[in-house]
Length: 188
Image 1 (cartoon, helix red, strand yellow):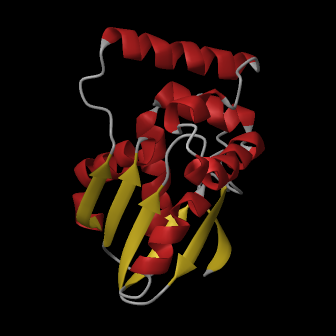
Image 2 (tube, rainbow, N blue to C red):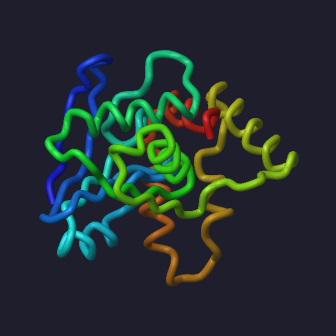
């Protein structure tokens, strides 16, 4: 598995990604606050049969953040531009959480580029209360006042078997570009 970077031709944004394996191309897109490393177990398993490309979303991992206010279609267009610069013509895309929204958007807006779409833990019919909670979190992040560890309480229990994973995920959250995280949360 190798970490690589690619510059987008129109925006000059740097896209960082992990790449491994050979075969049909499979793009993995993580959720808000994470990075491509969140896919390590899947990359290891899937690279035996696929050419796996796990991207860091804008403002996450080692990818550049957007330099302007953005919405979900901007993330979809970002991924489409990244894929347009690749030698392959069609991709299976799999996304988790916000990555699932990007994968679904790519399949809808750029069907000629998508051979398969896997949508995991995506938003569906979010309640008004849940929507308000997400918007509040986005505002807190934008103001720089959000507790970056608070998602860990929702995502993990107190089980000692989850401790190492919780610490790893917590480390990713502490390293995230705050503006990129806030932008993604707002789009989410």
